Length: 379
Image (cartoon, rainbow, N blue to C red):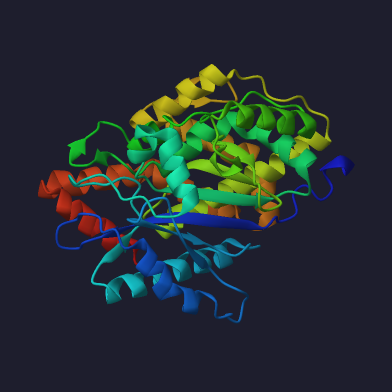
């Protein structure tokens, strides 16, 4: 480690936001009761547990959804505990209402459009974006990683870009859409990319340019507000973090924790590279968008863009390259064994989309797919 790396690899706080769907366990159809579920969890979520303030449960754009948010965590074990705690809060309130809270990124069985949560902001988004908003009943996982300031944050945004398709492939968990077999590992990504200003951004170079571009995008009306600035990775408008927004919500909590550990390692590695004065990796946004399409299409079973060579390679090779490039950050945070084992497992046995397809192939029943997702969501 060079002197300019000092502090870059120190364990940074990391947090996760998960969007969950509310499902009738008998039919697999979504139930528009998000406000009731949030009301049922708010008292428990405000009780301060021994370790801190704990997870928070919030409404989402559709009434068929809720969002959980962990506290900022230093260790992956604490993050795992908070993800599970958030799911327990929602599950308890959902079971009281006779429904299930499920970590699934898209509606699996055929059903009508979702109902927008009746707030002034959400009504405004629906009016501004029309059919795009109406058809966006999807659930993602957002990962927040601590940065010192916007200068450090923009250095991260510019350097993590080439690895985003791999994070998408690892998290891909949405092969079905309203009763249809899509042929994609992440149909959620296909729905999400319809929104304006989604996908990779060009390198910004510095914080002043990032904020200038943000103002220009907002001025066009393409982003309703900062929360709808849909870069794959962006500076958070609320926290001193960079926010990774590309992942499907993961049904298995260990997958969520492993991907969050990778995101944290990418942040630390990027900061160290910036402090050493290394140039921003050269990769065009149109190439990265194409690479993300490939990751969404075939996940870990097809070729992926390898940032170290600029060519297509097998998922195992690209994953190994990422683990090697972030090894020092993973070791320093104490995450190397857990993250490496998790990545190797996903590459060997398949992502969440592969699991859903296996259940469907065995049962020929999409309701059985939802039931399996519900069972595995439970902490």
